[in-house]
Amino acid sequence: MKNYLYLLLPILFIAAACSKPNLNSAVPNQPPAFSAIKENELRQDLFALAGDSMRGKRAGTNDELRAAAWVAEKARAAGLEPAGEDGTYFQFFPLRRARVGDNAKLLINNKPVALWQDAWVTAPVEGKVAGSVVWLKSLADTTGKNLKNKVIAMTLRPPTPLPVKGMSLWGYRYILAAIRQQSNMLRNQGAAAIILVSDSIAEANLAFAGHGFEEGTYQLPGTPGTTNRITIPVILVRKTYAGILQNTQTQVNADISLENFIYPSINVVARAVGSDPALRQEHVLFSGHHDHDGVGVPIAGDSIWNGADDNATVSVALLAIGRAWKNNPGKRSALFVWHGAEERGLWGSRWFAEHPTVKKESIVAVLNGDMIGRNAPDSAALLGSIPPHRNSTALVDMALQANKQFTHFTIDTSWDEQQHPEGWYFRSDHLPYARAGIPAIFFTTLLHSDYHTPRDEPQRIDYAKLTRMTRWMYATGWTISNTVQRPTIDPGFKLER
Ligand SMILES: [Zn+2]
Image (cartoon, rainbow, N blue to C red; front, side, top):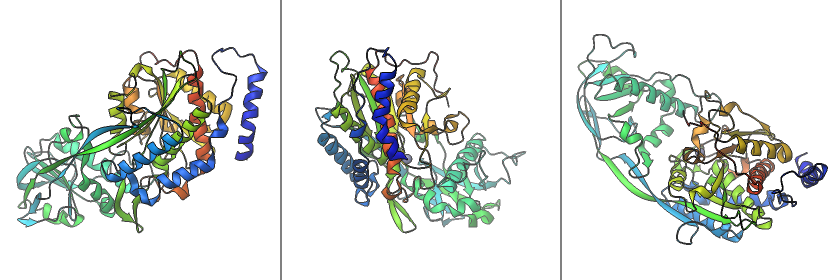
């Protein structure tokens, strides 16, 4: 069915072009070069970039640098020109990692508790705390209790709403959401430190969540972020500590120091020049990320988070679109940015949006993709396509029209709704561009049960679907590249969560 469809695509396009008068003089007669986007090349590239030898490409490690060099070499082979800094394919940026120092201590009744085995400092924060514990039976159990500057302990409560069921890492998301909600409420009571005792769901998911806490947080240096907001230690302990913490005589001593490291991370930037001398200084920006989660706690014996769908799919899609653009350039130029450190907090895209290597005004639209090779063959989503996330109706219309004309996906809009519990719109690299006032959309085939696990591997990708999604992104960019009127920002657009 799908192969049959693709054979028909150029014919359908020509038929459509011939059947009605061409009202837009800027649309060229040549159809886009769909045949240059080849399923076998996408597969081959993806097995290389998401293979175990790339070790999961974690930001700030040699593995990310190696993946970036691989992407740049493939971009060169595709005939794309370097568009990073100083005539290279690269734009380096600093990443600051903060983690709890090795000499941090937690004592309960003067007995040391093993950090990262029985207790986890859930965000890197410096602090010394000593005192007796105030145990709360519930969040309402504060009447008549002075909590100011006290060590407050209680059992972890389920978050509201609960994370969406059926997705991978459900327990991990449960822990994060529960800690965030509960510690915010207790912090507002003036606590000096918070100790949360695992409930049974947290207890069953401590290995993976704990690894993340131990790794710490990543930021651009000087960027206000999470570590500045979290002002007191929030410590998660195993269930077995519930008994001792309920005793009002129990004493807690914590001495937590921080360690900071500056790591290099890296964006890869390449360009395919447009065919129109008057328009080629303008850019359609195709965006993805080349990093993933690296090597971590083994799950079912596999310790490599390959990131095949997330986001090697889009990394190789951009290479294929580059080859198609070279084969048959659009009028405007295509700019390709493979961002680094997306998984650590969208830092590469934030850096590029703040330090673009082309004039910011020359970026007519950002077509970002993240995870485009899984789930039902005909389903896809376009985030930023309905209010309040939509910042350019003109851009969204072009993407939907390209799908209607060429790729025929059934579009799922539910994940773009403001009330969707996953907040998916806010979780990929288009976001800093939308914030910077550039028309931006996000192509995806959404979450699945292997998301952020070592099972996100090349053999689980639907390559026919990946080919079709790549063609949708390409056809959208091609349309934008050739229209007279570049897409405009909707009046009154405001990005709010
Ligand atoms: Zn991801």
